Image 1 (cartoon, one colour):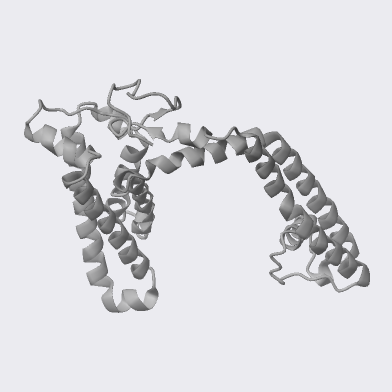
Image 2: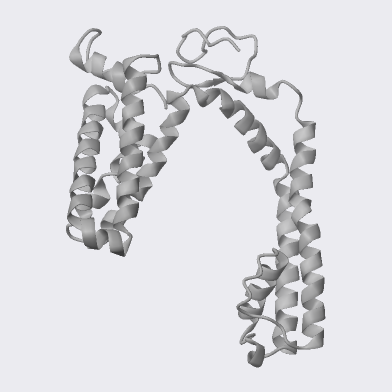
Length: 280
């Protein structure tokens, strides 16, 4: 998360609140975020239980009270974040700022829109803060390496996906002609759906060919599916092998103050805020 700055001078209540809510060091900031994680998970569990008809019939009032309690807690936390940051608009439009807002709005909207409270499951996205709480930002380097490999392989993967789409369209069309509505292939899109399910080896079984030719074609598509599954894996693996060793280490140089990624392995201070970089 980018640094938003404290709204108050050093030592003030706003500054201390900012350090607790947005801080990275051990102690109060980690305790705050740990409690926040428990509250987020607790609210999602309560929401999931409320979606079960039997549990809702017996404990509906209790679960709704718990949900409103969590919503008021998260509302107060969101207002505290806005109160203690200097760049309020920057926080409000940031990823976590938007998620924090969306995690409380559905409960209030449920007063006007029945069932809208189930949208608060989006607050589970706030658990992404665990990367900051448990110092897991170092693993973002490995994630960036994987993202780089996927980006380098995007054209090959695109060609592969276009080929697969062509195959399922052709096979689906053939099955529509061969099998017909009596076998469940009532249209070409329905045949394409069957081809996708068969090619990916999912096999729901809701549609099945009954003619000899259709069954032979189905067997061919099943065998083809096993071979196709390995293609994207090989493409990405080849791109990963081309990335120079040590790239992930370089990308894990993450500033604990502003969380900007430093790609220079020899850097000792953050080029963005000047804070000392963690040792690898």
